Image (cartoon, rainbow, N blue to C red; front, side, top):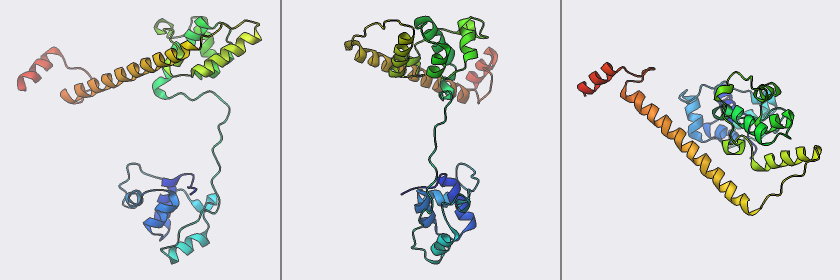
Length: 235
């Protein structure tokens, strides 16, 4: 069944502005009835701003009236929401990985000089200004930038990288180096292992930080030696 564009916000509006049953709202929005109950009781995890399905054309007043008159009536979508279209622009990169972008750019500049700034920007999702600064070594954080494979960092895929390198080599008349297909599986396995190790290290660091915050009362700064001794003595 087609759902509204914003199910939770639509459910919030229907709860506040109609006499429809929770079951009717849940079925129309594709939610669990307990989620609708939480929205009605204002105990949902997030405070929602209602979205009017009448304005969007997803429902009509006649359909709502029919549902209010008959609790067993299942609301029908009058107009399916428009599908989201990916617009042209830089690749989206999660916040947790954005700090790795300069390392990936530096690796591409060093290992694939045939790639243009535009091609690097599409692969990594960064600007030409940043790429040029790294290329000319006048980036504000150049001292801490370490070239790292962007595939291992999760900034792009091996297939996209190979395609970009092959295209750049063809444009510049460079014969691409033959790739042994037997090494492909080994490379993918290594990349998987490196990513797993990276994620595990991040989880361990976060757990250690959380544990430290619990021990010292959630302070923003680490305790001094005297404070630590005093805390241990009290324990």
